[in-house]
Image (cartoon, rainbow, N blue to C red):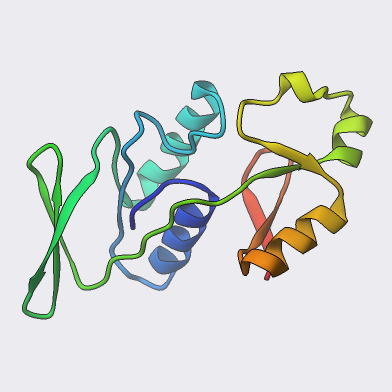
Length: 147
């Protein structure tokens, strides 16, 4: 799996739950770059006991075919062999205006790159881009999605 955003972590968890060995490669120094470091540390702490490989601060430089799969060559020089590679990059995040209002959160308190909108914005973005919309609980863990 390439990418540790919501999609990458959810997909990795689903694959792992089916007994598939998973390694996730992320070029950033932390998982879930849309959250602050403290929250990302909790993500690392949650992933660790599930034997999901988490390679941070490393990026895929090239893919090479091999019999029955692929080899991912990383910028660090490491290699990861896989039967399948999933690219989970480029998800857009939209904060719910109503939830922000209820919790007293101001737009200035959000990290850069997060849009603000209502439910209609979520559904419109999901349909027009054919991307999933993630519904999150207070602990930032994805609990479901609307496709």
